[in-house]
Length: 537
Image (tube, rainbow, N blue to C red; front, side, top):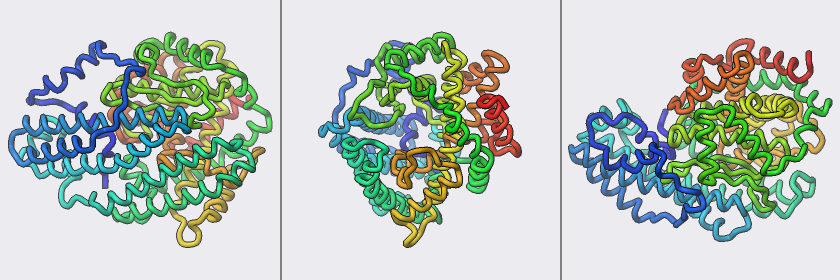
C-alpha cells in the first residue's frame, strides 16, 4: 500500500500543474509571496484555536460539489477546505513552537494537546475528501488538469479510515501528549543522571511499550504484520527493502564500531564543548550563507527579516531542535534549545537546511530520507563556507561517525522493538534489547544506562524516522566530498535540488548522480574516509 501522507497533501496539490482551469483568484495571494511582498514577521503571527465546525462545513461542501461534473466548482470548494486545513496546521505549529519554548506554560500546554488530539479528525477529513473525489464524475479532468494522473488510484474502493482507525490514532495522540507531560515533569530532574532515570525512566519506558502496542494494532488494521513495515510504506515511501536496511545497519555496527569507540578514547569531542553564545552561533550561519550566496543567502535574509527562529537558551524549553512550516503564512520556522557550545553551529546549520527546502518550494513535500540530505548537507557545506572551521570540521567528522553508529543503533533498536511480543513487550524487554544493541554498536562510553532509550524523542513522536538520518548522511557526505574536490560543485548540486518533489530516496540519488549507501563496498569507503580525516591513517 502506497498512500500519500495526509499532512503534506494540501501543499502537494498546490505545486502540481494547473492545466486549463482558472486558478488566478486562488493563487493571487500566493503569487504575492513569490514576488516578495507578503512577508509576515513571526511576532505578528497570532494564534487562535482552529474552528472544527468550519473544517467540517468546508469538507461537506467539497464532498457535495464532488458529485457534480463542474471541475472548476469542485476545485474552488477543495481550495476552501485546504484553507481551513492549512490554518489548522499553522495554528498547531504555532502552539507547538510556543509550548516547546516553555513546557511549564499551562495555556500553551493545553493548546498543543488540543491540536494534537484534533489533528486526527482533520486528517480523517482530508482522507474522506479524496475518497469522494475519486468517485467524482469529474475525476479524469481533476487528475489531468491538477492532481496528476492516477492520483486517486489509492482512494478507490472502501475507505478503511473509519471510526475504528480514528480511535487508534486518537489513542496514539493521547499517549504522545502524555510523553510531553512527562518531559515537562522531567525538567525537575538532572538530565542523564541515575536519579533522573530512576524518577522518570520507568514511566517513560512503559509509555513507549503502550505506544508500540497501539501502533502494532494500527499496522494489523491495514494488513501488516509489523508496524515498522507499515510505517515505511505509509509514511516514508522507502524504495529499499527492510532486508536492505537491516543488512546496512548491521554492516555499520560491524565496520565502524571500533572507530566510533576510538573517538572517545582520543577525546576528539573536546573541541565541541567550547562556548558559543547565541550571537556567535547566528553570526556563523550568517557568514556561511553570505559566502554561499544564492538561495541560502535569500533564505537567511528571510529568517532574520521576519524573525523566523527561536535559538535562545531556556531552562524550561523542550530539549530538542526542529524546523516547521507555517502553511498559511508560507514561511518556515526554526526552533532550537542550544547547548551554548560550538556544536550549536552545526545544529543551526542542520535546521537551516530544512528551512531552505521549505523556503524554495513553499513547503517541501519530498520524502523524509531525501529531505535529510539537504539538512545534513548544509552542515557539511557550512564547514567550507564558514570562517575558522578547522576545529569544527574535526567535531563534524566525529559527529558524522557518531551519526552512522548511534543512529544506526537507534534505528536497529526501533526495528527490533516492534518485533517484541507477549511478555517480551515490556519495560524489561525494552531495557534488555537496548543492552544488546548497545553492546553490538559499542556504547560503552561513561554515563551509559540501560534506560537511555527513553531520551530518544523520535521513538515517541516520529516513529521509524531515525533510519532517515543514517542513509541520508551517506549522501550528504558525498556532497561534502564533491565540494572538497571541486569548490562550488557540492553547493551547486545542493541548491539545484532544493525544490525536489521526489519522495523516493534511491530514485533521487540516481537523478542527482549520487551513490546508493547500499552499494557493495560503500561502508568500507566511508570507513576509509573516517580513518583518514580523523586519525590520519
